[in-house]
Image (tube, rainbow over all chains, first blue to last red; front, side, top):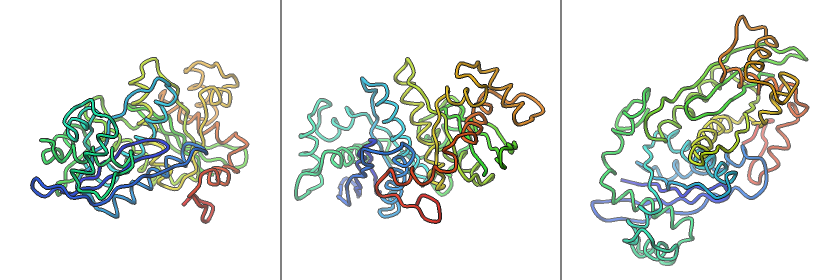
Length: 178
Length: 178
């Protein structure tokens, strides 16, 4: 099982790819997709869409997981973050990947063992669990964290069925949403 | 010039396709993409993505315009609407369409002549401008309205260049974003 984790954002979207073999986790890749600070929204969303599509076509994940985002004190920021997350999810579902969603608390619980861990602790534990030679960047660490959370989730293998049947008009073909 | 207008929403996304020949506008098609009320978010976004992609492949628009959305009193609704709009824009930019954005006030101004028009007036004027045999539904009328607004905009033909150059990493190839 190859899992793609996504930490969505309009300026920076983190991604992390890991492989799960039995109970062992292996690091494959991680990084960030940056849209820059300037410009109209649609081309910035295209950078996210194209970037996630490229990660998918390069690493061929078998499933995906994305961090849930929360409403910001600034409603306009909430709207922008929502659109960025919509573009990242579009790239995933457009590639027929089932997408699981986890809250920051669930991810910290899975990675560090407590839902109230600091960002630094997440980076440390991601590095230790995946035997990385150094600390990953904050966005990449969060993306690897959501992938680890999904790997450890009971839902990981049972996800495709319920997700597919939850919405009219989607079908499962060879184990994938079509 | 064939213009695709989109009125984004998580439950219902309206679309409208019109052709502009000189100053004449001709109705081509309109309708709605419905995701249903139930189910996880990623498959619902896939319904929007697939639906807009199908409209694009069926009617082959040369450009697109989408209504700007505003923050809701409920921040969670704002986040959901943002993600739905992100999926609709993803389908458009994924098809290499330049996407213009107009506020509801700009659309009402273009269609009815006043930025404070009621929904019914927009439906009436869209029907009259496009010589429809009856009133379009509210979501389809809003989508046709944003297409009409784009047809009448000074930016309509000059859009591809500035949008493309506004963002690092995008290029224009044969007049399209790549």
